[in-house]
Length: 82
Image (tube, rainbow, N blue to C red):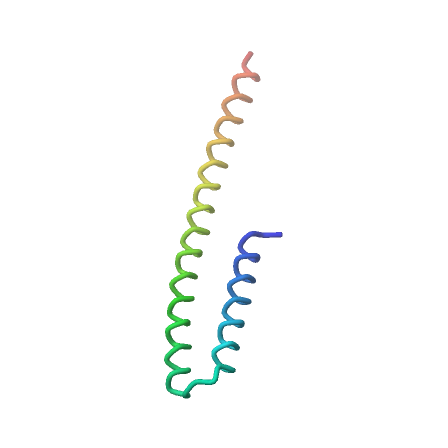
């Protein structure tokens, strides 16, 4: 399974659980809305961090793939001329 899908699923589950917990909490509506807003901001920040890490991993993987292709090309070229 793709790690991006797993991360997205976990974040969605956590967000849904937090929202449901706040909605069923015995608190004033204004406090509940404020708590939802705070949690939303926290989850948005966490999502930004996870997305940044995901992009960094993609870039790292891309660089490694380019290096592997170059090594393979050089090795194949040297074997072909030998």
